[in-house]
Structures are given as structure tokens and as C-alpha cells.
Image (tube, rainbow, N blue to C red; front, side, top):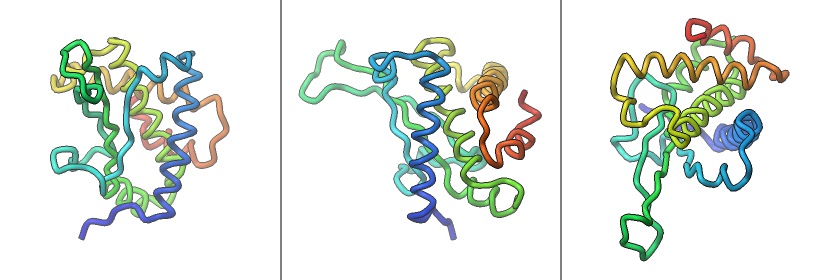
Length: 170
């Protein structure tokens, strides 16, 4: 049976999201108006539609086209990114790896996915290339390095074990 995050774990996701947003915001030196232009939602597995659920990854970013309410002009569309957290994969890893804590792991995942959102929104990496294996691998390595650079200067309990888990990506 698939297990989703419980209420306590959802609170941990919310806390990690706030910390991740602050870290990414500061790293990229985004003004508040620039940050708001990076339109995204963070969703956990319980709220994902079937095509947003995947096996394997801990999270993924999907791009949608949004449109302001009651406007049908093409010029009113904007990119909306969904950060799709895959609870079952995260729960399974944390349960099977007692050295990795949920809080630091969630923080790493959310910083990582928000770096993707910023890079897509700034056109530093085209979302459309995300399906091309050779581009995706290089982009993933770059995003892992940036994620490490964002988090490493801070003291985060349990993060050295998470960094060790992702060491092959740096």
C-alpha cells in the first residue's frame, strides 16, 4: 500500500519549503518582483494527478501554461511550474537509511527543485530539453552543484549525510 506524508510530515514539508525558498531567493539575489514571476506550486503525492506521479525520483518539476482568470488572449498566458514531491519514494529512502533524516532530505530536494524552477524561468535551461537524456544529465549535475553551493555554507543538522548520498552528482 502506498503511504503518503502524514500531518506531521506535511508540516516538515512546509517548513522545508519556506527555508528552501529563502535560500534560493538569497542565492540568486532575486527581488520580490522577480521571485513572484517564478510562478510555482509545491504539491505532495496525495494532491498529484496521475501523470504527475513517477516511480524513482524524489520530486520532479512539471511546466504548465497558466492564464489569468477570464482572459483568453495568448499574451495573458504564463508558465506555472508544479514541484511534484513523490512522498512514497522519500518515505521509503528515509525508512531504509536511518542516517538520512527527513528534514535535511526534504530541504535538499526542495532547494534542488526550486533551482530548476529559477533556471527554467530565467531560460538558463530550456524546459523543453528536460526530456533529452544527455541534456538532462548535465543539467542535473549542474543543479546538484548549485544546490550544494546554496546549502553548504549553512549549518543544517543531518545535511552531511544527505550530501554524501548525492556525492556522485557533484
